[in-house]
Length: 290
Image 1 (cartoon, rainbow, N blue to C red):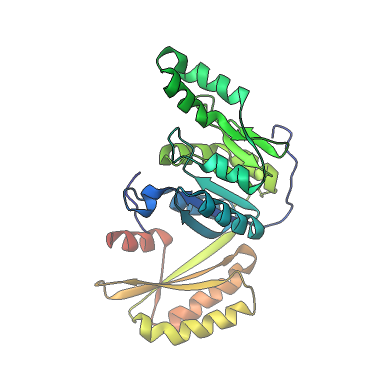
Image 2 (tube, rainbow, N blue to C red):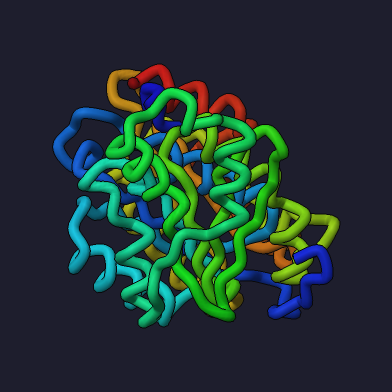
């Protein structure tokens, strides 16, 4: 994976609401043991931000059936959209399809359409041994049942986004594929969840202050308590920039409270000798520390 830098053709709308709650589950021992660095959750967080989806939780689990099942049961009870990344390859530790099927008490079966697409695009019979071919088609052995639907978002790819209950969406862990397929699925996400065309649901103000986090802690606590009376979606955060001589404060909320958020920003600037900064500049400050 890349190095991490901080910073239904006739589908029915299943949710008609201004905000959709979501979670992301990263699956793979290689993430937990430090062999690779997860970038998919960061991409999905940005994607949710840009499309008016409220990402509430990111979970990383190993290639362990009980971990996957337990975590998915937790996430599907709380959120309307859950994206998984990883664990759908041909090897023994790729157990995502089987584990998610077990979560929903479903069987797994070789999907004929998926197998046909694999044959058309990869022609595996021409170069794989019988054992290798059997392992190759493990990637076409997916959850099966009336609530399962495979979405092929790119004619050049045989791998689908496997959807269960229009709640869980199973994707590969390869960052290039994950990003390509999520972006290709945007029209379906909009249709299924009733996302608005004007997708940016949230707004954020950044304030730069010369004070330390200890010096601003009391003020920010009171500011958050005040904001919570207006909306639970308003979040106040602080970001230290060690060695730079300043910190930044984030004031985040939904569009319908934009005027109120601006007032909070103005109040912060006044009380903490701050100055407003653009999101791009705050991200630059953050990235300099990585």
